[in-house]
Length: 454
Image (cartoon, rainbow, N blue to C red; front, side, top):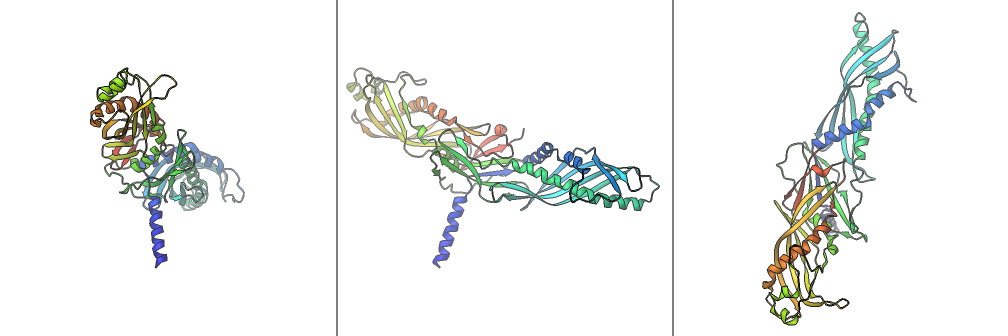
């Protein structure tokens, strides 16, 4: 009984760790583009046509026809459809002219229109862990056949010869084209799990949690992003609570990427040390020069301690990992830390601490995409709590400082944070995806990128 309980708990823990932090939904728009571009890039039908007339080891020549050549290959028309639980059904419609010496002597010219059909099964490569398509069940279907043979010849004999010959030649000639095209498509997954840098502080890589799922409308790829510090320590995302789900109001055939707020939180944990800031400039943003005289307006004791104004030096420290939350239409960055204010002294002498405040505030996040990076820009949303931890200028009402601190954060601190965030958070690299046209939307507990094609 104990063994069964342990197995059940281990299974539960495994599923928890495998919960995807990112979901990729591939609609027919992207798949059509990728298969078509792979067909174009490979020039595979033309290559197959060029190989047709060559002698190949182990391949017997076709009886009744010699000097076989293929020319005038038509531009293929590709039709795809999803097969739930399997992958993609592919039909390539094309045409060509086959020439050679016939069994009756003289030149023969056969104009063929055909369909090549195959099932492209979607799997997970055991060695690389990447998605991979594998072709199976390839068939060549003759749509029409025309020949320059004289019309007074026995049609049954001629037709039997033509169809038997073509059924021997075409599958071996055309079916390898499907496999060759899939090689090009599969290569475009190669960078998916490659570690991508977040500045100099760490990396992010996207790992498949399971074999991608195919439905009648899309392929879903569940990704477990691994966030790793430069020292090699992995930052585990917090429990995201409710499972990630795509909104259902997007156009049929379109593609989306969903990133959980928990995953974004783990990424920003890489930058936590960079959120610690020392502010020493006398002129800060739109604020006037910040001196002890500025503080004296709120804390009279400061004027008594410093009758001659001294420049202020602030030290902001974030002592808890930054947290990202998301509600429909709004995303926030939660920061907990301390703000310590000092009075500067002459060069070479350490500044004197005036007070230390514990602080909790939210920054509103505006998202955008630049190349393969998610960009963030922030602005002050709310100052949620402010309390005095220590003071060298006596007791004072912290609430009196609320307006001053909010202005200080907005003008002195947030510009520094926005500079840090310019490093960008890497997005998964797959199928040569261009994210520049993606539309960004904030949903419940997640960020959604509606992927657009060029």
